[in-house]
Each structure stands twice: as C-alpha cells, then as structure tokens.
Image 1 (tube, helix red, strand yellow):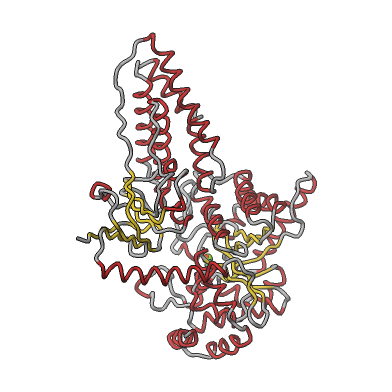
Image 2 (cartoon, helix red, strand yellow; image 1 turned 60 degrees about the horizontal axis):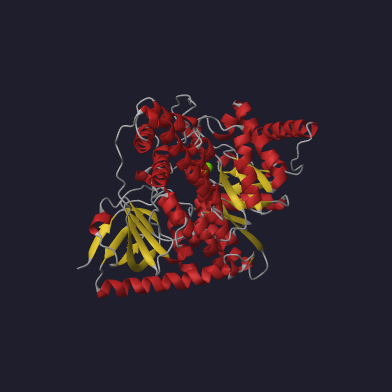
Length: 568
Ligand code: PEP
Ligand code: MG
C-alpha cells in the first residue's frame, strides 16, 4: 500500500528510486570514573583522537565551497582552547574518562547555541554534534558506516545527514534525500541544492517507518515522499520526470553559451547571490557573471559590523571564482525590513521610506568606508563593479564617488593594488531615480533596475502586503514605461542597463524585457539556462515592436495577458 509523508521543502525536483536507509551505529558511552593515575593516559587518548580527526580533515581534497566551509569550521572547533580545556578539566578535576568528558562537553556546547534566538547559529549546532561524533569514533576505534558505496541509484532516508556523512558520499548514485531532522538552511538542504537534487527535511520519524529497499517517489516541489506508490502514480511521475529530464537536457546544452539574439544583440545572463555557496551553484548553472551580490547577508550573519579584512576575503574569493566575469557587488542595503542584531536602528514611523541603504551608509561613513576599501582592494583580483542601492539623487552618487576617490588616494600612497577603473553603478529602484535618469547616468557607469522596490514605489503598493498583492504587478504599464525610460537614458549616454529585481527572472517576461532594450538579466541561478534558451531563439527588433504595443496598453491585466498570448 502506498504511503505518503510530507515535510519541509529543502530542494526542488523529482526523483524515483529505491530507498537506501542510512542508520548510524549506537554509541554507548563508558561512564566509569577514573583514578588519578589514569589522568595522563585519558588526556593523551583524547588528544590523539582529536589529532586523528584533524588529519582526516586535512586529507579531504577537492571540496565544494560548502564542504570547505565545514572543514574549516570543524578544524576551528577542534583547535578551540575552550573545547580542549573543558574536556581536559573534566578528566583531571572531575575524574571523568575521555569518552564521558567529550560527550558532556559537546552536549553542553550544543545546549548553549541551540538556546540562542538565531536560526542560523542554531543549525550550526549540527557541526558541534558532528565533530563530537567523529572524535568519539576515533576514541572508540569505530569505523563509521558511510554513504561512499551505494551500488545503485538511491533515495537516502536518514534521521539526519551530517557534513561528514555527505563529504564522501557516492554523489553519482544519490537522487534525493529525506531526513527526519533539519530546516531550510540545514546542511542537507544546501548540499541538495548544490547537487540539484530534491530534498525534504523535517520528516519527523520517517526513518523509523522505513525498512530500506522500498521503491519511492520524492517530490521536492510538493515536499512529499510516496513510498510503495501504485502503478498510476508511477506512470504520472514517470511522465513528469521525462519532461523534466528533456527540458534539463536542452537547458544543459545552452547554459554555458554566450547569448546573442538572432539579430545579434549580445545579452548577459547573470546571477543574484547572497554568499559564496550561491556563487558556486551559479557558476555551475552557467552564469555570465553576478548581477547582484546582496552584501547585507554578510552583515546579517555576523555579530558585529564585518571588518574590512573579513569583507575583503569574501569579495576576493568571489572575484577569483568568477575568473574575470563581471561581479556586481551591491553596497550595504540594510534598514526597512532588514535589521542587524548589533545595531540599533532609530524608531521610525515608516522605515521603508526611512533611514536605510545608501542613506545610512553616507551617515555612518566609517562603516561605508570599510566596505568600499574592501571592495577596492578586492577589485585587483577580478572584474568587480560596485552598485549603490536606493539612490534618489546625484548628490548621493557624487558623495560616494568622493569617498571612493579619497580611498583610492590612500591605497595608492600605501602601494596597495586596486582597479583604477572600478565601475560604480546604481540601482534604479525609486521613482526619483527614474525621473532623474538622464542626470544620474552622467555619473553612473551603469544602471541596474531593482523592480522589486521600483514596482512598489511607482505603484505605491507595499510589496509585502497580501491585501493588495493583486495590485503589485510589474506588468503594469506604469512600471514598464519606467523600465523603458531608464534603458533609453542609459543607451543615449552610451551605457548599459541590467535588471536584478525578480522580474528579470520571470521567464514569461524575458522577451518583453528584450524588446524594452535590456542588456543584462540577473536572476536566481535556477533561471539562467531558461532565460538563455528563450533569448537565443528571439529577435530583438521584433520584440521591440511587440514591447511598444504593450507600452501603449492601459492596464496591467491587458498587458500581462497579451504577453502570455505572445509567448505561445
Ligand atoms: C529590488 O528592489 O528589485 C532589489 C533587487 O533589491 P532588494 O530585493 O534586495 O530590495
Ligand atoms: Mg531593492
């Protein structure tokens, strides 16, 4: 009998295969007290176990960004004096044996961070548990079960999957994951997204209900796993899978192609990213560059304003990973709905129209300078361009240019390398920037249209308010005319315009945007190949004629329906 279980979607897609039930060996902790004579030998034992796991980590090569980050986190923990000192003092002062001392220390550390009011840190508790378990295996001389030889294509069901489980996994044969534990940002989710396979987490006690070897369908789009499905369901999913695979194959062929329309217009299809893991995925998915690196995530995941050095390392890595392809980094866009734990924002009646983004940066110039200096230094390592959010005036752009020039003088004096021609562009996401586009483009090297904010401010419709979500529509000719105007002004000045708002990733709008003259699309990386596929088959001049008709329409509904019709 077919059984269906539902969990939290961690990665989309569909897979059908037999289940490989991955269970862990139960570890029994020896609770015997030791005598004073045993202190030295027990301390030595734990040190050797830690050394041995450290060596294993050092031997792990060819790692993905995510795996590299985990390796570094594990190594940091293993050499953390607090970790080692706590275990040692439990042995020497409380006369606990090495196993018990390790077990208690890890549990205490996990309890502290699990109690924090921070989802991201909470999930890092998994790293602590993982390190503890690996060191325990070493102490007890256990060779752990692993996923390195699956033998056949499989869906993995497990209570949880730790970084150590997935690091040497037989990736060729893993078609999907379903785990009892884990959230959207857990390790399982990140790995599944990197591998582009479906995953469902938070399945509670699924692993207890499975024997292993059952045939199953995992639907990452619905967040379900169907165990022992009936013939009809298998047929339905076989069809869906076939369609998905055919599309995947076609997109696989176009994803790395340079896009030129049939009449020769060159277009860049870039990715929006929030961190280096996103970038790694985007590169695999064929991005021509990054059109928006939302740096606020670096600030939001930190417990202090990230230093120049911390930021420099991230921007430099990203620039190197892109091997000369454009990397547009947006300066801090904080405020509105995005806060920081370590910075008190003023109480405001209307924070979305308040102290945020470029306004905050020009007020707290030291914070801004740290970021701009990090960006300038990193610009020596690749094709970095800087982009300012939420600009409303030439003044903001000129003030920023002045800060950048002063920083350049200082770097020159100190003989620190940077790109003298670093491009500085702006996001056009306020009505003021649209209206002043002809003036702004004199001082900006490029425009990137932020349709998420632009739509809400042009239409005066809150982008997060469900009550009026029917009015929030970028197909509204008012928004489309704004887009057209922005692009025209940049072209008149011999410059280019991209788009990094979500509208750029709406594949229904790809041809319309081409017709409006867009030069660069920047979207979530899973959209890249599809956008390229559409543009490669399109003709810019023809789409321009169609776009002009749309611009002449009277409302959003008419415009959107006409676009749908045109795409058929
Ligand atoms: C936008 O407003 O379109 C944009 C890309 O910025 P964010 O969504 O980060 O506000
Ligand atoms: Mg915005």
